Length: 316
Ligand code: 8YV
Image 1 (cartoon, protein in one colour):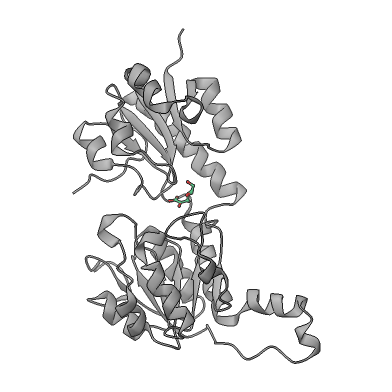
Image 2: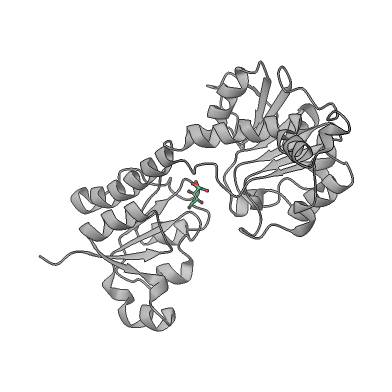
């Protein structure tokens, strides 16, 4: 029996690629040069597309696949996928929420503690032989402080539970208040920033949240407070953040995501009050395997039942 053709946009975990190619006739798009010609001639052959949160699926790609019925995304963020176009064409879009909540929340707390207590900076200090000359300067306490979470979804709530273990007081801002949550709601991002010692960006990316953390919000956060971002680089005005860090408008930032990954501006890399991780929040063996399994299962479920196992919500 002929295997179903599956178009792959960007590299995935080796074991996922192996599992997919055992089940499907897997076609790596990046190996087809020139891609435009390939899509024009053979785009109509594909009913299924597999991609990552990073590579996504653009409007152009979706439009070049007239028979497309299902997209399976490796990741919880689908801002790089044109979901509106896909859903208008009744294309099922599967993704991988929940399974990465713990590792992303662990990373969020790690960044928060690191930027406040300066573990990375003090590690550099020790290795440079500075401890032999003087003790490391005092840092900022974490326990009992105020944590403002922007975007109290599944990941935000997992972070909140961890922060409660540090006796932190928690408030949040979302597009809408959620009365089922045991945390106080701040009506605006500005009031949240003004209130908190640590502002945690845990919202989704995309046009709706682009640059919402602006120079004004950073001024509201203030010179003793910290910003942490485990969501998407697009949520923060990165230039404004660099200026705020350089000028002491805020105390520091812990970042896992950037405006133009993997390019991180030199000015940001020079700053000692920034902890910079290379977008690794979900990158553990266990979590990435769970994500890979769900990418595989979403496709399998579509071909068995006509529905992916976990579909992205309907676009507004
Ligand atoms: C991705 C992420 O796994 O899930 C997301 O949205 O940002 C990460 O967990 C990573 O970008 C690879 O696609």
